[in-house]
Length: 161
Image 1 (tube, rainbow, N blue to C red):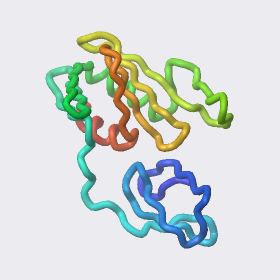
Image 2: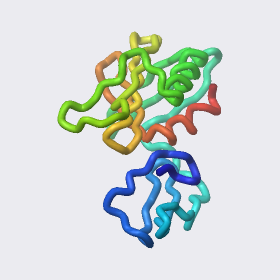
Image 3: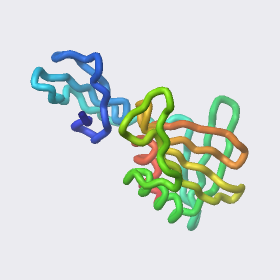
Image 4: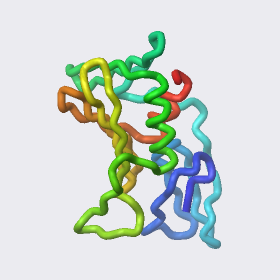
């Protein structure tokens, strides 16, 4: 089942007809109906800013500033390269064959990976599909790892590309 607001895949296991659930991707409040469909109860008005990532264009590059507590790191990526990487991750086309979790076999790929070259070295973008929720990981040249909600990160970055 997918969210009728944003199209994000939802796990309805454990929910019964009449239960309310939140879409983690867009924040919509949904109700599970007796026929198995979802009814939109509330659509979020203004989306909160994406915590942990600031992005701004600078010429042919996009500057990404990641923060976690007092730690702050910045990388510059080519706009066209980041745009192509996000497109490929949305379409489910990565550079590595999708892997499956050994202890939780499933029929879907667990993650997709795309590599980019930044001003400081290689950056790895990985879309984690399993286990839910759908996440976007950035591994920076320093080795730091930042996880963000995939849909929200894409909505933040796309206008800059």
